[in-house]
Length: 467
Image (cartoon, rainbow, N blue to C red; front, side, top):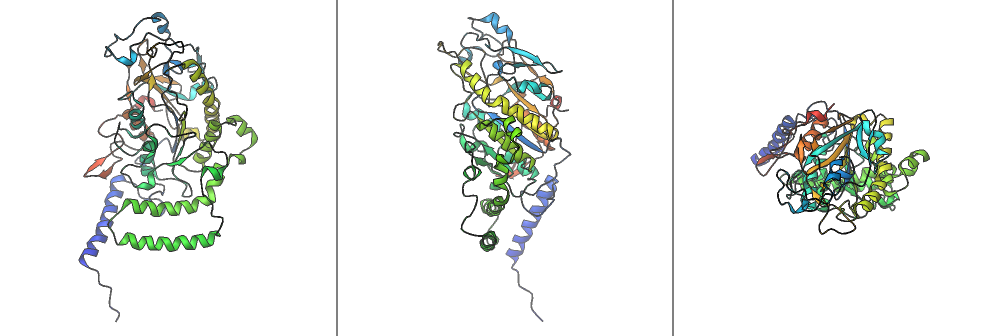
C-alpha cells in the first residue's frame, strides 16, 4: 500500500490559513469571482450599479469655474473692488485681488437651460446629458495635495486611487487588456504616478500609464510584440517561468508584490493579441475619426471609447499635463486655447457613447483638482489671471446613472464660497462608488491592522445627483 505524503503541522496551518482568509474576504466583499481565480476576474458589485465603467477627463491645473460652467454676472458690479470680506474668507491671500469678471459669454442650452460658457460650444450641445456640480469643495488649494485628494481621497499619503479601488471591487471584463488605463500626453501631472497608484492594494490594480502623444500603437505600448519568437514558443517559455514562480510563491508567506508580478506576466502575454487593435484608431471609420479630430486629445478620447467598449473598467485621460489649466496670468488666451483642444473631442465622446448605447452605463467625469478665484492674481499685470481656489469649483458628470440636465449646488453671487449644497471630494467619491454598485463604507481592504476605504472615515452619497 502506497503511503500518503506527510504534511507537517506548520504546512497544514499555512494552507488552511490561506483558505480561511480567502473565504473571509469573499464573504466580506460578497463578490465571488465569476471566472477563474484571477484578481482581475469580473466580479459582481454589492448591489446593482448603474455604471459599469468610468472615463475620467482630468483637466490638470484647475480650470476656472467662473469662465466655464458657473457664471457670475454680479462680478461686473465689483470691478476694481476687493471682495475678501465674505463669510469665512477674511484675509485669504489667494482672493486678495480685485474682482475679475469673466470675459466669456454664457448662454442657456438644451431643454434644461444649463448655462455654459462660449468656451465649450460643442459640449454645450450635450447640456441635457450633463450633471454639473457647482459646489465642489476640497481641502487645500495646492496642486500636489489637491491632485492627490481628487485621485486618492487623501492630501499626501500614498493611498489607492479611485481607479484602483474600482478595479479591486469589480475586476475587469477583458483579461487581455489592463483594467485601469491612464493616458497622459506630453508629461506627467504634479504628484506623477501617485495619482494612479495602487497604494496598499495588490499591485495588479495599479493604473497602466500610456504616453498618448504617440500615434503609432507600437510606440504607445513599448515592446508589445516579441518579433523573435512564435507565440507557441513564448507560451511554453512563460509557462515554465510561471511554474518556477508558483514554487517560489508556495514557499513563502503571502507576498502581494510577487502575486502582482505573476499576474502582470500573464497579462503582458495576453495583451499581444488585443492591445494593438484597441489602440489602433486607424481601424475606425473616417467619419468617426473626423468627429473626434486628428489631435492628441481627439485620438486619446477615441482610444478611451475603444477601451471602454472592450471592457476596460477605468480610463483616465489627462489634459494640460505639459501646459496646464493653471492660468495665473493671461487667462483669456490660455483658457481659449485649452478649451479649444478638448471641446470637440469631449462632445464627440459623449455623442459616440450615446450613439452606441454605452452612455447609460458609462460614467463620464470632467474636472480638475480645484478651480480658480473670482479675483485677479496678484500682482496685477496687463495679462490678468486667477489664483487657486478650492471652496466652490465645478465638476460635471454624464451618463452612468446620473441625474442629467441639472446644475447642483451654488456658490455665492461672486463665486467666493459655496452658498448651498457643498459637495466635498469625499462625497463625490462616495457617489461614484454608489453608481458603480458599492457602499463606500463597505468596500474596504485590511491593511496595517485596520480596514481602509477610499473615503477614509468621511463621505456621503449625494442622492440628488443620481437618477
